[in-house]
Structure formats: C-alpha cells, structure tokens
Length: 140
Image (tube, rainbow, N blue to C red; front, side, top):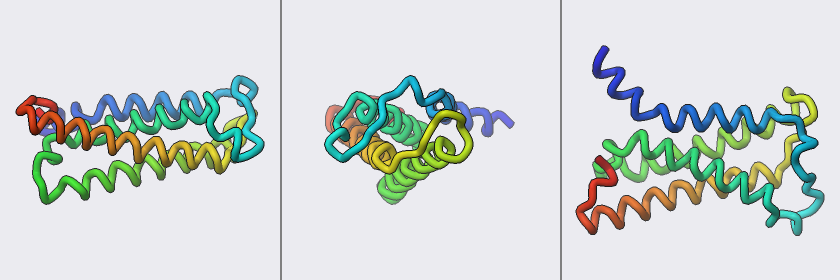
C-alpha cells in the first residue's frame, strides 16, 4: 500500500489541474468571448487554452519524471502525455457542446488545447535537458 501511495502522490498536481480545467470549461459561456473566424485565433481566450493545457501536459510529465530519466521510455512518455492532453482537450470541447449549459464546443479551442499540450511537453523536455546538462535535480 505504501508503494501505491508513493506512486499516486506524484500525479496529484496533474489530477487537481485536470479537475480545475473541467470546472473552468463547465462555467457558463457568457463569461468568455466568441471566436468567429481564424483571425480571432490569437486572442486572450486562446492564450488561456494554450496555458491550461500546456500546464496539464507538463504536470502529467512531472508525474512521470522518474521514468523520464530512462532513455528507452522518454519519447513514449512524452507522446503519451501529449496525446493525453490533446484527448482531454477534445473531451472538454465535446462536453461543452453536449453537456454544459451555456457552453459551446469550438474547433479553434480544440486546436488551441492541442497546441498547448504540445508546448507543455516541449517545455518539459527543454527544462529536463537543460537541468541534465547542469546536473540539477529537476527530475528527482
């Protein structure tokens, strides 16, 4: 049982963040501006999507940081975390369209979620590489 607690403790930040994302995406839509075209893409709303899904993917990888040190698993874990972030971004958009009152799913939001997930993985990999060169304890 102690091993399980040690394992699950690493995933609490990502799990709490996922719950926060679900809460935020379920808020009524009148709090957020509509996106009508691709040119509205670079708006504060899209930057929020980049950020929240980037953090989600980063925290997911943070939970796997011990396994990330193993070269054979490194790219598998990055791919898994990135796909998980993209999948979760899609699920939130589907929930907004079909379940949450006053919210509407948007393909541009989904794209922003996906790009955020990719950026979160990239930031994690860059920090891990930088800290490995400096012999820092980022992955400890």
